[in-house]
Length: 307
Image (cartoon, rainbow, N blue to C red; front, top):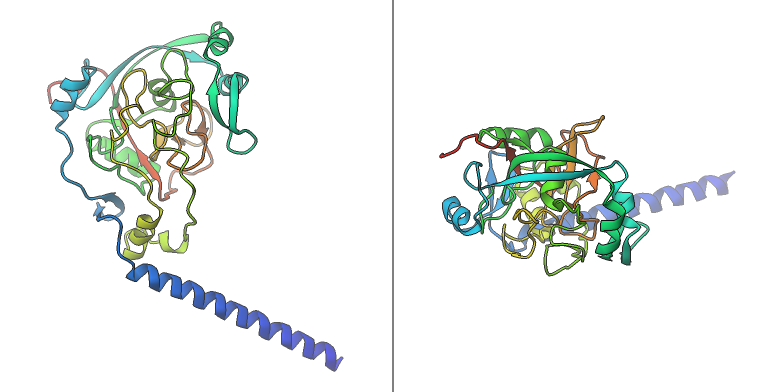
């Protein structure tokens, strides 16, 4: 019995020492991060969101004139119209046309799709008329500026509402990305790491550092994790309608068009994830925030015209 008590005592001591060592390692890591120079200059927006500071982006009128697709939309937006392919199984159908997988089982990343086969498979699908306006770039929708991050679904709606716009519906976002052919990527049928900001190696994040998002510790963690780019930095990451950065860079909040929770993330981020037009992430609630979450806004044609 005495031997058993001694063994338990030794085990308890070892566990306590391990915990102290682990805490010491975490403390030293946090201390090193606090002293490390930042890779970017960050600014806190509205006391809760973060954005990398940069010179003012290109004027909306300049971008509108160069792109030529504003139509009947407010400044900085793209007039999207056409027929959207409608099928709850479309994403599954599309995977049957993959010619070469990067990663099939977990990430479902396809290097190249067979366009001819896809057009044959999808030719008989029902369609629905679509017409709406969508921001050309991720919020704040200025070419050359970095996207705003650490935003939840509710806050995204408020940010859009402040511009007399709204969060895009899931279907609006999808159609603006894939076009009438329902192509898998905004730039076509080939996954091109040079076209969009995708497939960067993931970096381990410190959940505790992100808990209080307005603090310096959170900002430093974001600086460590960030692998995105300014809006419009990849000219080939452009959808058939002329909307930029829809896959990769940062995840974007949209409003669900299906039963269940309203908060849907689209497009993926800079990491090795699906980053295709059709898939949606439905796992997070309306109050969820994380380091790679942003948004873009939509509006109705003719609204705010001339402002």
